[in-house]
Image 1 (cartoon, rainbow, N blue to C red):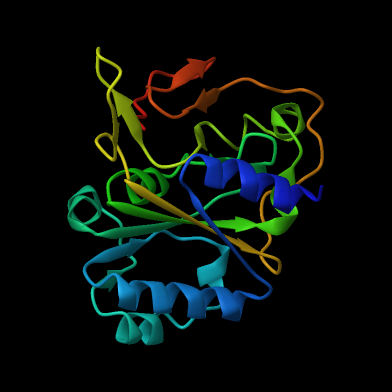
Image 2 (image 1 turned 45 degrees about the vertical axis):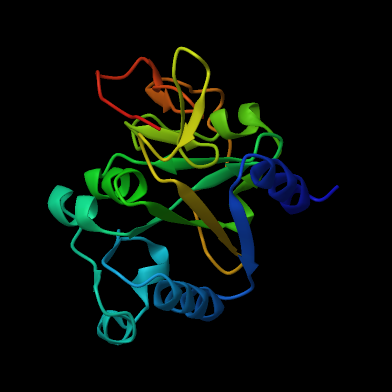
Amino acid sequence: MPLFDTFKARAEAVSAEVHRCATKAEALDFILAFLRQEPGAAVWANGPLLDDADRLRLSEQAPGLAFEVTRENAAAAHCGISQMDWAIADTGTLVQNAAAPEQRLASMLPAIHIALAPTAGLQPDMASVLARLHPNQSSYISMITGPSRTADIERVLTIGVHGPGRLVIVFVDELVGQDSSPAAGVHAGLRAAGPGGPAQTWGAAPQRRET
């Protein structure tokens, strides 16, 4: 099965929504249409899709959209948009270099997270992604599988308590992600977050990441 189809099946099994666009222009149109269907404030963290985009036109077509991501406006936003770097097909997991605080704010605080991912960043499994991580460039790595899930002591599952209740993943064929060359098994400084619990950290300074 192609990697995209495997990822889509795994991600949708944990309530994520998965879409694919061929070009950056198509992805921008998709996001604008989505924001019009989900009116309210939105924040968009810096990323390659914005590099060549007309931000003024985007903000005019999507009232309430801001490109300055602070804790205050991210907490007040209905949608947050940020770029992922890789995706793990066999678990439906997104992987993000989240060293920049705005990336974490856009992906954790709004009710809806729109995650942009380069199709070229699809990898078959966790080992393939770990082999491509460069700790000197990525001091904070987030791994996201589905929307936020929390279970209490009675194992009653609740969606969206400690993070977004809706995860919309948009793969873009034309989008460029991180360098995909292997890094010879360099795995230090990882911070991974899965559904239903706090992140685990290996070899990194203490930081907080909830999903």
